Image (cartoon, rainbow, N blue to C red; front, side):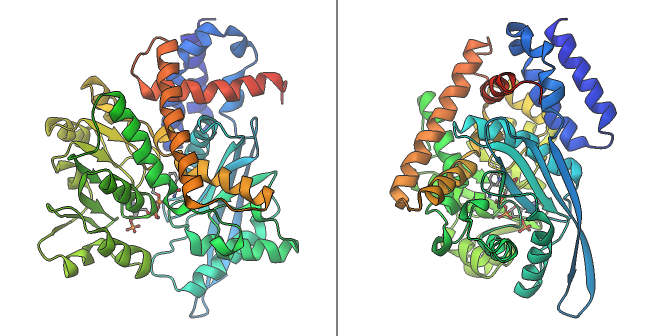
Amino acid sequence: MEAKQYVDGVLKEINKTNPGEKEFIDAATEVLNSLVPVFDKHPEFMRAALLERIVEPERQIIFRVPWVDDNGNVKVNRGFRVQFNSAIGPYKGGLRLHPSVNLSIVKFLGFEQIFKNSLTGLPIGGGKGGSDFNPKGKSDNEIMRFCQSFMAELYKYIGGNMDVPAGDIGVGGREIGYLYGYYKKLKSLSEQAVLTGKGLTFGGSLARTEATGYGLVYFTDEMLKDNKTSFEGKTVVISGSGNVAIYATQKAQELGAKVVALSDSNGYIYDENGINLDVVKEIKEIKRGRIKEYLHSVPSAKYEDGCKNIWKIKCDIALPCATQEEIDEEAAKILVQNGVKVVAEGANMPSTLVAIDVFQSNNVLFGPAKAANAGGVACSALEMSQNSMRLSWTFEEVDEKLQEIMKNIYHNAKNAAHEYGHEGNILMGANIAGFMKVAEAMMAQGIV
Ligand code: NDP
């Protein structure tokens, strides 16, 4: 059978067997289409039904999460953990707490995670989880009770050699602390490598907080250098104002760029003089407030309700760091008209498939999420290593390893694109390089 026919057949089957799972189907379509040249070269992968196996999670767990709010009302949310692929190591991937979370979103994230984790060069498989719980406006005690109830079920399925969750949207150091505390109580053991993103006093790694944002900028910097340019003097627009966006802003500013915009789910700020990150950190990391409050400290900045128009701001580099599908075809076309040169994804799947086509057909340098935002999970794997060795590396040691990993990811993706006849297409290269390692491991392990 021809490779293209094989891939089309599997995609047709995915559409049939996962009805309504738009995000998962989009993610699978993007990855599978780019693997056609691989199957041309490796017909043995088709005979082993590699694609049919890789698109089916090894295990999916869906569970009830009951908890009591501060007024004594009983609330119920739905919890998820999708253990997608363990061919190269324990399942690894974050937990997302956001009202939009459903099985399709968790599956798309888990699927992407397989290839992202493979690209880091570290021995970690792919998984993802979360809940439709909305942490916004909840007290610390409510967050703690929710996390404890969530862990009361999840603990049965995770472990340092089994499945190692971490943070994602709505899950930062506070939530990981509560989750870890309850896991330890339920299991009566101190197993630090069961979660990453922990506090520094109980097994966390220096630089984990910064890793995804810094890693995104290291990756983009390598891509810029390879194209004989740099961040110096560039105007940058970054969406989001959470963990990834804040540390991407910090590193881009350190490299001489001017970051002029940030957003949250209510709207965006524009500061033509360059964002004052101390003000943003105070609002987001300490007060857990809204981005609009930036204007209290910097009245010359502008605020607009709604997030979409952030992409109308003229910039050289766009780093979407909020959420999936935030750049659609229209936004991509406006970015291109305004002269954007580089788009690198800090969030997972922030550009729709059509938006990616717009960027690629207009020669915009495009850094896909699974390569560009792999710094967080890479650093999580370094946290696991430190936990196993029972020692802690310095910030500089971790940061140096992170820089090396991000540079390697860029070059491995670029080389894979070249090898398979798609010179310069970092998206295809990342998919192929990430897939090859998992494919070889799956081939070696038989039909499991
Ligand atoms: P945070 O929860 O820290 O921040 C998310 C930011 O995005 C907030 O500013 C939030 O605004 C905004 N946001 C969330 N949903 C929407 C929406 N529907 N529309 C507009 N804005 C929205 O999450 P992270 O920074 O950790 O994650 C951001 C992205 O990066 C996600 O796609 C995540 O999967 C990805 N990622 C994160 C990694 C990590 O290490 N944290 C690793 C790899 C990828 P508000 O405050 O109003 O909700």
